[in-house]
Image (cartoon, rainbow, N blue to C red; front, side, top):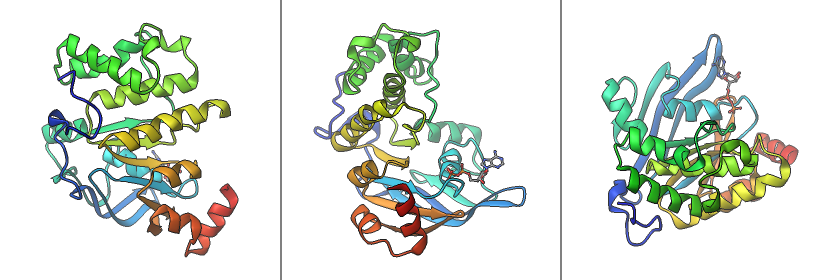
Length: 265
Ligand code: ADP
């Protein structure tokens, strides 16, 4: 209901709370090609419920393609992907819709509905897709706008907001669907530098205070270090090393990782 807290305690009974440590996302031998370009090469990895996993690596190494596969925006050529124990490809349309409800995504471009108020941007999908009563959706939306620091902008139009504020609305909009996992695709790359910190602070807060699983593509290495339980370093469609952020950033094993971090930090 609308007064269900977002925070860890007490547990949110409406959000299909994940069993801690269970596998929420699993990629098994996933290969994805575009023509002769092998973008993901026999990839295996999994994300446990409640964990924050960050994908790093050079541009073109396949990170965004993973998020797009999970959103069913594209299909693998080989291998299987499961979300919360249910296989994504192949799957009946109805099952795909159910799985997609468990996944929220925030893109580089915020893609807010320009003709709707901020509040309506956040309530639209819960009302139309989940059939949530309007009152409940609005109460919940206000709570989420408060979480992202924009309770006072509920009546504004997206064009009246800065890019950073728009991105914070996009985060609230994704959370309004009560997803089990939040996919974040370079959510600060399109922002003016002075607006980046505000968005990252909101995400740090969400990582700290909610149960949500996060799978995040970012070039913000300090942020990655702060929020991640695990960092996966990609190169040419493969995970070349993975581990806790202290290890990946503090003592990278692989020459490619050292070069990448050296270039970016
Ligand atoms: P990253 O997120 O690591 O920058 P991407 O997953 O976006 O990498 O892209 C990996 C590779 O896949 C790139 O070489 C890119 O050009 C290619 N690619 C991505 N989407 C398409 C597409 N729709 N058609 C053809 N090639 C694509």
